[in-house]
Length: 277
Length: 332
Image 1 (cartoon, helix red, strand yellow):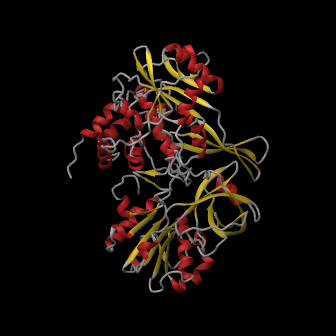
Image 2 (cartoon, each protein chain N blue to C red):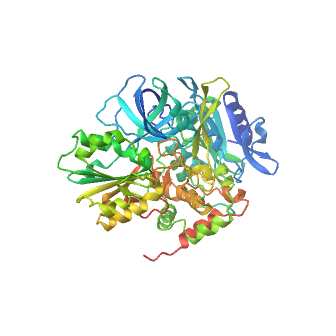
Image 3 (cartoon, one colour):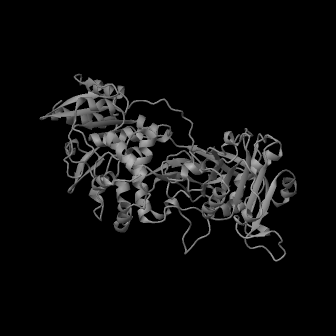
């Protein structure tokens, strides 16, 4: 049949990466630092993800969460939620896992120019925001633009990156709400939207929301009340994925593919698509 | 080419290829490997199961793994898929686009000779189907096409491979059709654009989908027989030796509840998922065919073969549903 000109790169074949470091972040989550076994460079942008796998156990998508300034190493957080993540958590330093990607569009950095940024994260959705936070603190962005974080979490134990917070708070307006804190907790209690009642949202800002599906509707409501336009609200979505190439259909929403057209969408893109949020 | 020559040609092809062609299996017409070329049936009836599995197998190995070693097994035998009707050729043309950058599909395509014919199916189940005319051929991808004329065939070629094989066989009086792109000069299909527009204005909450959600039993038969449905899972199959096995790509069906499941805490014993009910799932199926594929490649994900209607155990009729999608008048 007619021959197409096509690139013979087989995007289904993963590369091997070595585990350089493992850090327990919370009772069910570990931060993995990885490096390709062939020591090749790893480039990505904030909000992108990789397909991480183990031979015999398949693959799943994970948010990239290290700083983009590292040329060779990259980081993911793995929370134990299923068979694959249980296996990955059992691995030790020096062992290998498989990587495909990075995939996805990432944060709309062109929309962030001369704008303040508010990141609103829930649970392990917060992982997807860490690259941006680290780059911000490294001075990669315009220092005039402020960064505010609203983070909703279960309890003190489940707060991610807790030992980095002291450094973060120097440059970021970081606020947290805990759903089921210990009696000692003096901060905001409840879901992430509680923070909106107590804290003034930074003005002239673009918002990015990453969290469990249930969270989006309520956070969007709050942001809209504060005068955010639909085009200034961005959401990073989670879906089942296999190929990462916009073919297998598992992550499709309306006319979009979360793996290829997302995972970050503006609210104006998704507003009319029932079932998206 | 007359019938006698056609049988000879089939025998010639089977010397160096596995030949798949429509044959009778009880009351059904199916596309299976040809053992005796006299069993090949060229008729206006569309075979129940499509040619799909020969280009997009139900299960295929992406690679083998042994500890940290990966063995890419891209290889496929020479094959002929013989006797496709024009709707099925449309489906081949669409799959060629969808899997344009897929090395597994492309390898299989390279080793495949596609032979179509001009008998047009009767209208009971089918729709979208145009009468065969020579100029429609330039928008279909094939290697050889047999236009039926009485007891004989006018032979067209659509590729160099097609020409070469006819030359080798010793048949000279064919006419070559230059592929002019899969979209016609006047632009994408109008009917497709109308359905696309109507679908985009509606949602799974519309009465049509809520009604279908009540009768569809999610058996997934329609997705299996559809010549276009190509969604897949990727799964690892471990071998007995620890650390060894194969990564496989397998057909999936958007009607099955695990299709949109993600990891996370279960509620009422079920994992979180995004397609929550039958109405959402059947709407998703139509959305793929009439929203996503037209948006991506300007082709409808339905070629009008009617197989899904034929196999549906509860009588869901895609032709009627399309009429209903188009009929809904929306007030803006």
